[in-house]
Length: 165
Image 1 (cartoon, rainbow, N blue to C red):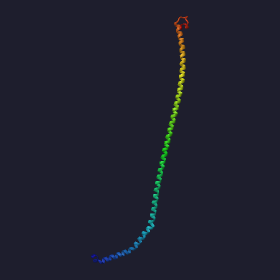
Image 2 (cartoon, rainbow, N blue to C red):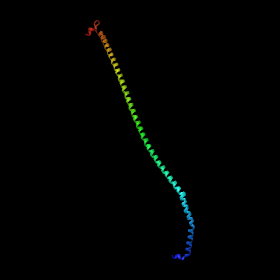
Image 3 (cartoon, one colour):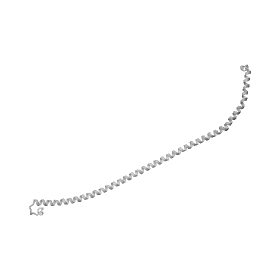
Image 4 (cartoon, rainbow, N blue to C red):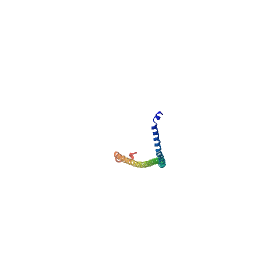
């Protein structure tokens, strides 16, 4: 305090200058306050509204994208299930075709076997009939040969029927 009393003239001048500065700055402060209020009404309000609308649209778009992704995933799942079902149907049809082809092959083999067995029976019957015919020819040839042998061995006036007895 002693320092203030020692320099009263300077202090009073300083206070007087400060009062003038404050008084001169009142219109600037009022203008600044009006400028801040006008900014709030003219710029900040519409800007906040635009930003909120933009945020809601962005959030809505994000939610819509999430919904689309979920729908796509469900469609993908459905597609995969249909694909699996189609593949299993194809495999089942393939198995049925293979079984059908095997059955047809087995039938063809059985028919070929039956046909070949019939041919073998016919061939055996032919061979049997040929062998019977050949036996008869052999027996006849045997009789003729034995008669020739008997004629050659026996004297010339003997009957063959007496020699055989």
